[in-house]
Length: 174
Image (tube, rainbow, N blue to C red; front, side):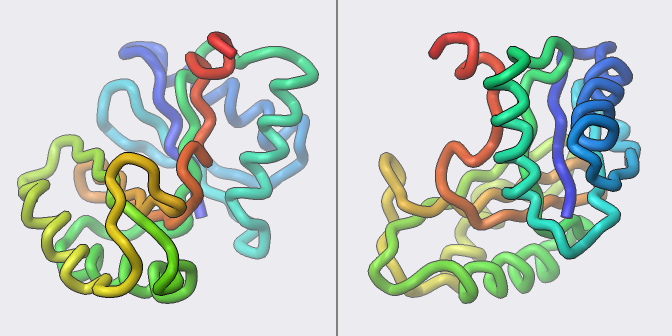
């Protein structure tokens, strides 16, 4: 369980420090930084696997509500799995998560963000969607979002409610 932290290019260190400070020092969750080697992106891994990344995200939201938006972080995305980037693993883990969370009555969509990977986006989406053959595909207003974040040789996966991530731009505009 991890968090993908986006920032402006050349501001990764500040964003990672800011997120680490809030999650580790203020909220008291045990996290460790991982290198993404992609400009504008950092990863924090939850060391305590018992804690849900969505619980931490809610705690971060509460902190932001009380103290104000973060400065260097643009977005924080909760990731339930962080796996090696290869198509069979992505399909297997995504299908596993979907079976746990998506009921036949739920509507869902796949959101894929791919950075510095040779895998084809259309192929990933088609193959994952073919395995999840229940529920209702709804691209505009789904109840559940299947989030696939490919960062070179690492892929983060989550099955979550839409807008479960934290966007500082949305917080500031609201």
